Length: 281
Image (cartoon, rainbow, N blue to C red; front, side):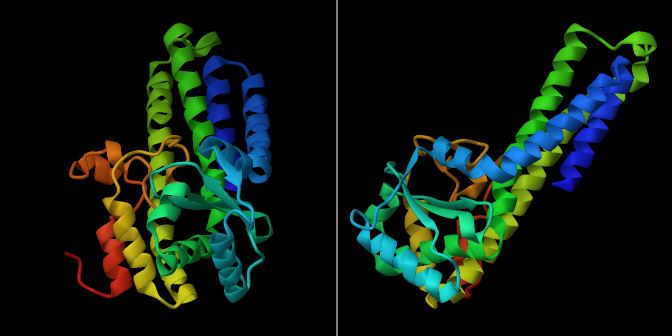
């Protein structure tokens, strides 16, 4: 988050130099500080709203609630809030800023197709994200990467319609460097987000398997999730990396190079092979 402030401050410095307006620098710094504050305190609420999730009661989802409660005790974690998404596509994710303010979310489609050991495997995976402190990193990055994209888009539009300011207006080198940075930074930020997500999924699989003491449960659950076709009703590219499985897999050509580069999750067959201790097919 400190790095994010420094990055936005650097972008603001360049924009203020290019347009000859020091006020832009202070506006950029203010935006960085505000977005840091918002992403830390409110990003989980934004994610839940985007997913159209609602809190699950013990009475209505007794088995699910009991599984999460028992695994939380085993992991030595406070009981997170349990939410459910009304979506036929099986999926799940965890969010929150720390273990004391965590939420685990399951789709109704997931609850419909998994047996108890498989559901325990998925719940253990999501609790692993909480225990490994992935939830703050993965939730905050939704806001931070989005902010970088918005600033880049603002600069590109200003360049197209207004050009530079003052004696910097004719500086072609500055314009060229600025355009390159504004185009590349959102791409780099997105690739960084995806790389972090892929790495943390493998770690959560391993930790979840240790927590449930039954790796086959999670492996079998991942097989069922992978076989399910379709895209989630409220899938959002900003939050796709939070899910246990790509919520857009119904819309993608899995064999293309670009798909592999911008994949939010490691290939499911690699995750299953790691859980089962077998060679990758």
